Length: 97
Image 1 (cartoon, rainbow, N blue to C red):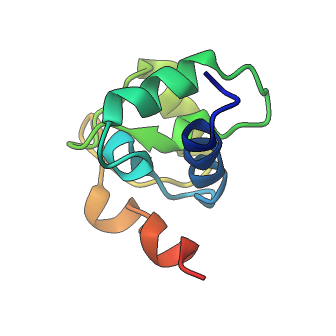
Image 2 (image 1 turned 90 degrees about the vertical axis):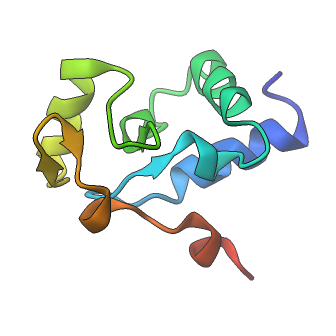
């Protein structure tokens, strides 16, 4: 799965998100957010900033561990969810050539 062009693009997009910001599974692969999740689950690269990918409503797929990592990067929260108004990173704007 990870050797497809589509999977490589998902991983490239994850790596483009700077510390303190997040993106969503839908931003990684608009046509198939679940594919993005599958790619992330299959990737074993310890340097992949997986914690910067959240659900569309700002909730965390990986709970307390993910929150600790995001808080350490300065990502803002509103209650239990990432404050997407402040922390959402527009991948499409960043990746246009």
